[in-house]
Length: 286
Image 1: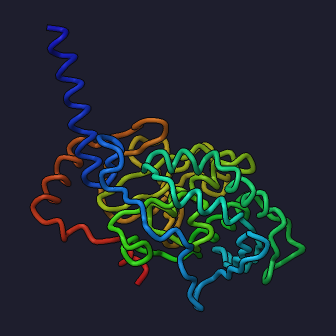
Image 2: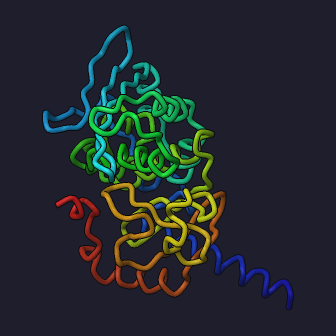
Image 3: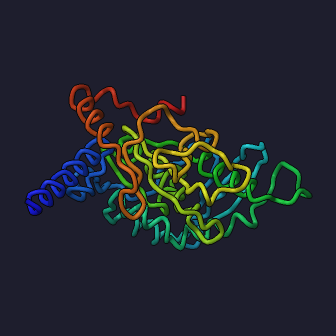
């Protein structure tokens, strides 16, 4: 009897994992690499004249200049460089959805970027006003929001491509998954030290930050299901705690910390009935 219950539990977990992976495209849960393609083009994505960043090549390095504004309308500028060999190595490797998230949290390059924020140039604002913890928080959030939303098919020529944080920084953007990895990586670095999570919605991904790690200014921000994490959009500016009106399917940090079984089943059913209902988050940019 115990063996039967155990096997049923294992089956339920496997089925649930497969369902979540189908909805979000996270096939690493079930069979790594099924929907994650390697692009034949490992060169950086072209940067448009309307972009908030500029990129030049010098001494086998990509020299990047980022310009952005935070929620207080303070304007910032920061320079950062990555070796061309680092970008090429990242582009040539196959990455999984969960491994890209974990790698971003321990990336030395994301750590260097986060350290650079301490010496970021204030282009417009009050230079004499001490930078509070919440201002530092908003500066980093504004940086990620300033990066361009890019679809994989348009920039890499494949249906699904996972950019590690190093690629996202050089390309100057990515889709909701790529920007989520970068934002989670920044928040996880020692200068912030936040506990982060991937938050999975139908056709979308965002960052969760543990409610006890947020600056005091965000005390009382609405929490995600499970009452541990607060939502943080990586694609477009939203108040902390606010996210698109969709069910939260799962929250992942070193394993699934929350799963809404009924929402997973319901969304899976809707997906197979009408896949076109699941629009890309690019629509949010309009």
